[in-house]
Length: 256
Image (cartoon, rainbow, N blue to C red; front, side, top):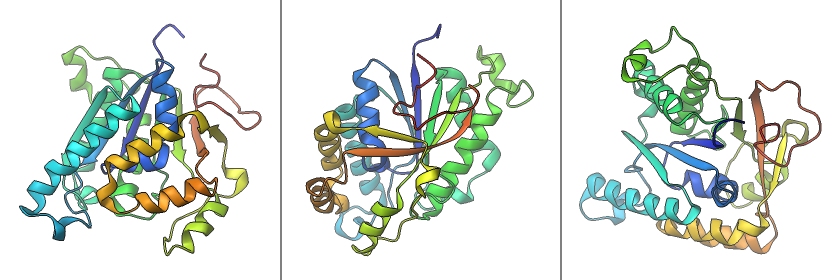
């Protein structure tokens, strides 16, 4: 590739980046890949709201601070917070929101884009919305007829090569169901990419700990002890590189 390797990760809330794909992010950042994180909201509708004095505004500032700490731990150097209302992402103007993501794609020129799948893993409306918006932006970024106002700002159409969704295997979803977490699991044949994050697991846990006030940290420690966190799973949704062969071990397979 003539350009520096670049990964764009788009999620809905502070902590989504650490829990879902923190190991992969840490790996690629450590390899010199430029990692850009889009976070659509500041998470001000969190379960912690009733425990924070100052209301949503204070909580938004707190969670943004935690996100910046986690990003630093993971090696993310480019953080873009869109600032949409937490819990209201499905209600925003889709053309405007998609255009903002398209603009970032055209600016940072990632070969790989990663986001939630259509079910958002948990079915959270914000997760579903960021999946839909990011997928649409992936398809629109290379279209000369879409968001042409960007070209007047010196940007050019750009086509990322691969779009991935985070994927939770069914066996892990079943473990979490016993913890009263209802999550959507993927069948084995839907999981196209498995990354061993063992060398980066400690970094991932440190990033998760930055968001410890969300209340899931202790359960993640238990899953780590059970050996459930040593791999991260993904579904290759769109590839402009041709047909995929065996299960991948690298989101940048075929690009380096």
